[in-house]
Length: 190
Image (cartoon, rainbow, N blue to C red; front, side, top):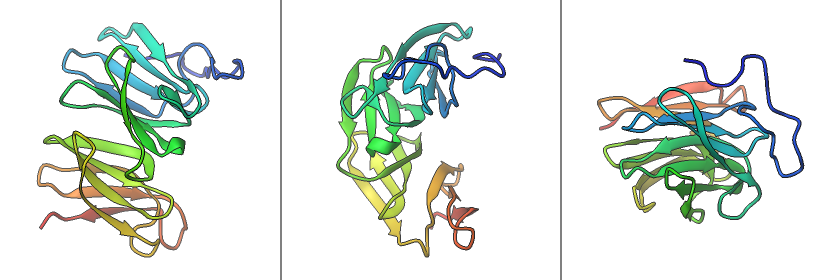
C-alpha cells in the first residue's frame, strides 16, 4: 500500500497551514489494534491524518499555533495502550494527547523539551529531548517522570530518534556536531 501521491507535496495553502491533501514531509506513523493508520504530517501541513486499514483518508486535524490542537512541527505519532493518539509537537516542546477522532484530551508541556521521537513499551514511554538540557526521559502513561538522564553535549549530543529491543536496551540516533553527534548509541539495561 502507498498513501499519498508520489512526487507530490501539498505546499500551496493559506496562512493557517491548510495545505490540502496529505502529505508534506510526513514525520511519523502509528497503527491501532483495529488497523487504523495515523500519520503526523509535520513539516508545513501541521496535521494529523487518520486512514482506514484500506488506506482511505478518514479524518485530518490540526492548524499552526500554540494552543490545544495546534501544532508547531508535528514530529511523531504514537497510539498508546489506552488507545490515545500522542503527538510530539516538537517546536512547542510538548506532547499533545487526543482521542482517535481528533478531540483534544491533554498535553504534557511542563516536564521536558520534547524533540520529537518516542515509543511505548510495556506501558512506559521512552522519549528523547533536545535543546538544553538534552537527554532521555522515561514516563508512565500519565506523563509522570519515572527517570531521566541528561547530557551537556559531551555525553548525549542532540538525540533525535529512539527505539528499544526485547532485552530493554535503548538505541538513540544523534544528530548535531560532527565531532560529538551524528551517531547511533546503544544504552544497555543493567
